[in-house]
Image (cartoon, rainbow, N blue to C red; front, side, top):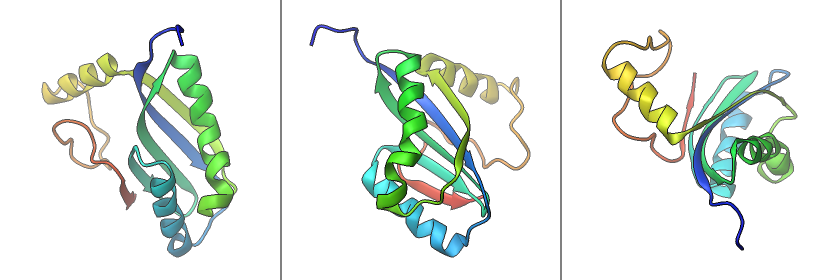
Length: 130
């Protein structure tokens, strides 16, 4: 196993599609957390979901490729809607730490609708509506 060392990547996967009943979506997202236990947070509405997690991969290409497969690979087993991937962001830990430092110094504007910034990493398995 003498390949390149693995790095830690922060991944945000955004999905969107036809409206679904959020009463059925929430349990599906909870099942996704059970099947993929290192999810940091999921925000959702009836037409969109944003999944955040940390992943180990050789490089950004591998992390992005795994991210794009996450939803389809768990669609049937978790009962997820047939939504499409509409966005993928993969950044290294240093970038996450830089952004956090910028927010703390007031140099990076936090979107008005976002939740307050917490110290450290997101809690694992945090699933909540937008």
